Amino acid sequence: MLRQSIIPALLLLCSLSVSAQTSDKCNIAVPDTLLNVSSAQSITLSSSPRAISLNVHRIDNTPNTFFYVTKGPKKSGGHDSYTKIECPDISGVLITETPDSLSIRFTDPNGERMAYSFPFADPENRTVRTYIGSKGRDFGFNISSNKKTKWDVISDGLAFGWVSTINDKTDMDLSAWRSTEFTWNNLIAVRMTHRSISLSLGFGLHWQQLASKSGYYFHKSDDATIVRLPYAEDVTKGESHLKFFSMQMPLLFGVNFGHNRYCGFRFGPVVNFNTGAHITTKYVIGDCKYKVSTESIGQRKVTVDGMAIINYRSIGLYARYSPMKRFNDRTDLDFATLSAGIMLGF
Image (cartoon, rainbow, N blue to C red):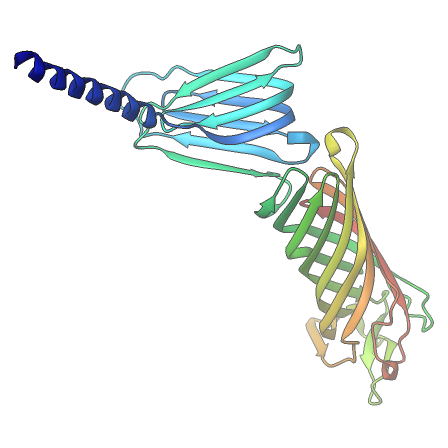
């Protein structure tokens, strides 16, 4: 009877032991893959018991950088020990994370496989920020991406330039140095990037003012024509501008090239919705200052320009050609404009 009771008990204990071992194996955390790419320009990492900061630059020969930062609660007293890693021209990059640690594997330029593991001091109380993007080049967020193609919502291209008239059939005789424009090329845009090429469609803002040369001012006649007239003899100082405001939609094709694809070239049409235009004239007679503003000067509602941009990293030069007439026929103005200047933020 004793033997008969012991055997079932032993079988029960074995069953519980196997079950416990199986349960322990099931509870082993499976690492999350944060990044798995074939190459990168460089990797930089700073680690302390409280925080880890990691950047993998120019992944798979694209402008994208992998950013990762995790921080735990502040420790009181004592001094943290720091670890710093910097390595260029790496390949076979694999970065994984478990609830308890961060693991990094890559091959250095000499072909040696490197592996690091950084435990989290307080896994339950930490914050994490991680994303892939082109920090410092534009502002926005990623919609979707795969190995070759990425879709982003961006904002870029603050520009200042100078304007001159071409094909002028009405002898506007503008001052090119005092005729200026300001552009926010893409207030918001959707951009598709495939390897080194891109295509974007956006919405932006454009301000332009055309300055008359000294001694003359713009005037809207009773028949709606716009003419240039000389100032009165007693005017000691005067300036007169045709001012435009447009909401624009640029459709730009681009390509990145050169070392690490830091250089870029973009070109394409820009549709302008010319919502505002007026004449502003300021002059001085004796000790008195005068300002005259004339609205409804007859600008065309929609025009199309051509734009070309070349940049290195976040600074570039642009040219903008406006071949279409800016005014209705009744104004008796017929000219095109060419502008060029500096553009920041790509």
